[in-house]
Image (cartoon, rainbow, N blue to C red; front, side, top):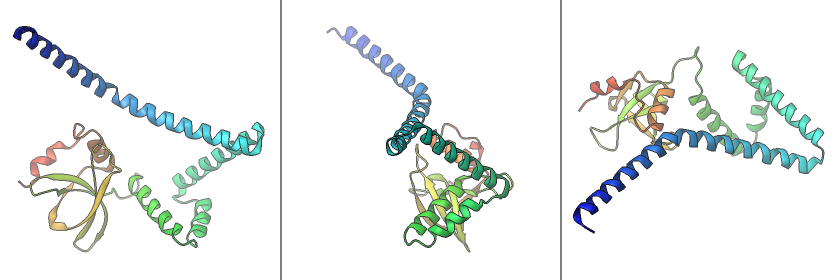
Length: 205
């Protein structure tokens, strides 16, 4: 192959690959949403057919799911209005008496409460912390605090549910005006969605 033809083929391959990557990134949000929908649909269908197989009657299956739907809606309504639910309180009392399960249940509730924001409650504090070395800053959720020590959850991109927990002195963090949704968006978008990017100008070198 002549050098000019090779250069043209290389240039064409680069253009095709670049367009492929751009197209892939463009439809990635659709793919993620589609995967979530497929997962939920599969979960619902497998549960429906599982109940149907167990009871052998579609009418009973429908009533069972209608009852579950109504119960969850009622629980959501009471939690939204009163911040607590009698049903959940009874479940709490029952699970707290079971070893091991009570620990898993308590920790899971704390994690869910951390990410569930309520407009009438104090906003979850967000800070920047240096990691993995000085001069490199990451946003982190403040999950706990004792005196001058911060307990931080540092999410990793692009999945904010992956990360690590550290304990640092308050002098090692820089406070941020970001909220949980903004940090989550920042992590999932690998930094392309950064609502308060001007904060980086105030970070120490």
